[in-house]
Length: 543
Image (cartoon, rainbow, N blue to C red; front, side):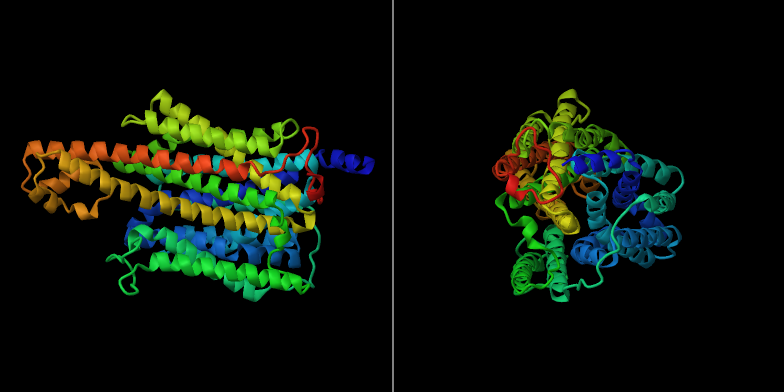
């Protein structure tokens, strides 16, 4: 015990290694946040439709989600410090490709390389934290990763929006390149093992989980474009009239189940698996995974719904959106960093349940107070409360998984985190989009019936079957191509405003219901004693 405390005290003499890991998280998060800001510039530079330019985002996410488990095993084989430096160089190369890209194909390839690098960086961060820090300092380091994601999103919007307006989209990735160079230099302060060359990568499991993640991500992301059930005109193909999106989801789930069956069989035979499922053996650890999935999905829903409303409905700029989301992002950043101070006083179960209560109350509050004027104190207060719950939960559930696993399995925990977060983000965004569009369609249909001044002939000209979120100005442009009178145009705009606001309120209420249901898995999180500090060595028997 004395030796452990002496070692902890020695490790606390320097946070310099953590600076490298913190900036590596910033590197990935800044790159992801910069992509949506750069879409307009890429469309103009490359002369391609927005759907093609947005492939950079899709390719990055797919590469991370599909390769993260394989990346974790590769890190264990090669050694975390060495592989970390290699993939940081690869990430730097991807930013160079973005800066110099002559065509959109180069940009897509650049983000594919960035995603492949991130698939190794994600588990490497967890493994290197476990190797460089212990006890309460480790919990603080884990909280720093959560705060890095939030602050990166804010800075990317502010810096990227400014540069994109004044200079262009390419200089944004010069910042990414600069961060990569700094991370590489600071990586020489990290310590880690030399790896284990005897570790073999389970290729069958890698193919199963990779294909499952790709199909699930594509399926959920295209529920709107391809159709939630029947195939739309935008679907690449149909199966007996059915959309490929739900079929992809079903097949992805089946492949995921095949991955777990194969992995359990491999572990039973004493062979090294792609991911050690012992890290989710207990109900407490599985509860942490469920809670992580829900909290990330909720964050994705909010990050999709609110910018959609501000930019599309209110017709404001991405810079305005970043300012409106500032209370939420800054609160997540601060809470994710400070919540570790409560670990010695309250068990994870208490913090988890309280966190989901906060997010539930905040979403219900927002559904009541939200209106067409976003910058109101009640709305900002709702975002603040949601940010407190969100920041606490993201750090908490991650910390539970890390502290419950031995240090040698930290890479497996990191890969589980990466897979869960990327899949949850894709599912959250897709479900939010499908939900809002479906509710909007019902709301508009009912509103049209309630407004007799909008005749069926006019509704047919506007094509209400293809209802979607549209600004008032765009709707007026559409109505100019019809035989609508000025009074009818005003009535249609009023219907549009009422329906969109009602849709957002209903969507927030549904999210509140999901958040409330998440209290159940949160109630199964560990109940450590108030004076017990989690340790990265095996502690499962201690709870």
